[in-house]
Image 1 (cartoon, rainbow, N blue to C red):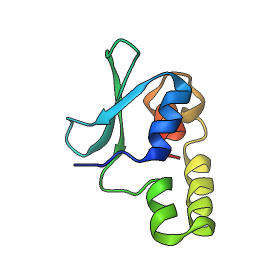
Image 2: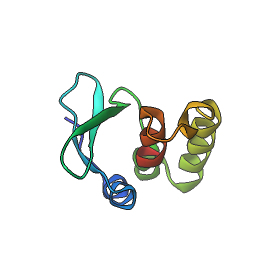
Image 3: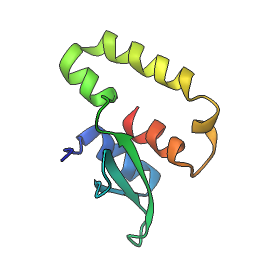
Image 4: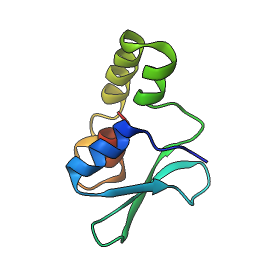
Length: 92
């Protein structure tokens, strides 16, 4: 089971959503609205995210991974309310 980081919790609070460990196979977190209604599941547990890279490999490496992620997902992560949007904000 994925342990939600403080980084992700802080970003979720800024967005006005709640995050819990996902009940879906191979997903990191479930995103819920203010009323605990399910929005989507984000993050694949088989891959690392910014907070994990930051902890394991340091600031410079994590920033480079973030840059590459944002570049790869540029089109879909800008669609407000999409799963890609939440993944980009909460995990990167």
